[in-house]
Length: 385
Image 1 (tube, rainbow, N blue to C red):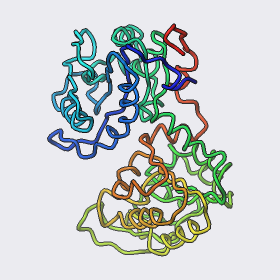
Image 2 (image 1 turned 30 degrees about the horizontal axis):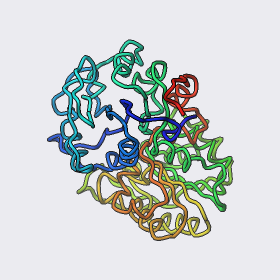
Image 3 (image 1 turned 90 degrees about the vertical axis):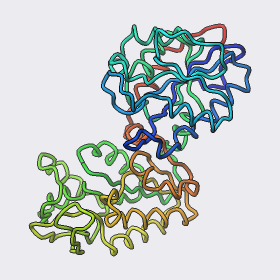
Image 4 (image 1 turned 45 degrees about the vertical axis):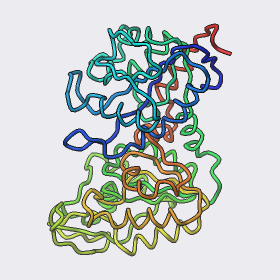
């Protein structure tokens, strides 16, 4: 698969799919510009290689095929302008636009058009006419077959940018330095079976946290109180319990409500009281996880260990984050909610993925639709070196 270094960018209009789906607050203001910053190396490389123009396209939020004022790309464009210290011209749509003679263009939110998520060929063609070369540098979207990530590869010579190249390199865990452990959290075990099974082939130990552990506890016959668990997946969960690589927490922080003022207590994993909800793993379990981390050379982590959105249930996630950040080990963070949880320590980790869902699908052994599309549609134009 071609990378941006395989392309002749000289005086070309370069159409770049970036992932500027940044977190925003109720006013539409950006709360973290990490994803914008991650795109800078690719943008600068294109500028340094004498392109005619860079045209950036992204989605923001879930507008469901309608124009939503709060989800326009204006504030993203302004932030990019400051980061690059260059003018970025923002368009009012992503198709049927007259592109001005400016070096950097930002198209409007792709998902204002339902055809984007429908992977519509005609919509992809209308995007493709804006460029001579297509670059996908939006790893966080590569597990979706959308018009700007899949169909568009039929109409332009394409490649991946530096961010995607870096993600694929670090998320290839097949040759990780051993001992190798993984930590998985999150709410639903049903969405994690694929990655759990794949990781069990690679790791020495797999430490599990988050609400998904309660399905495993229920499969063991434990009392889980009012904790979240998935009844229909108990049989599959029970099969996992036979694997000695799986390590579960020993104690649980419980509360009577998911509330910052709720009363809490710590109980054994097997005996959560009837009216209580498991919302974090306990101190003994954090220490257990640290003991396994101490044995490892490489650690992969995806998914918070508790209901981290409420600070009193973020203790385990924060403790493990700080411990890993200061461990000196190879630590790869799988993105998504985990990226948000570890953001203050981001610079101390080996790699922090920009794509939660994409990283999990890739690690699960699935070929990402956007990668498959680039491989299947390697259009050979004269501008490919």
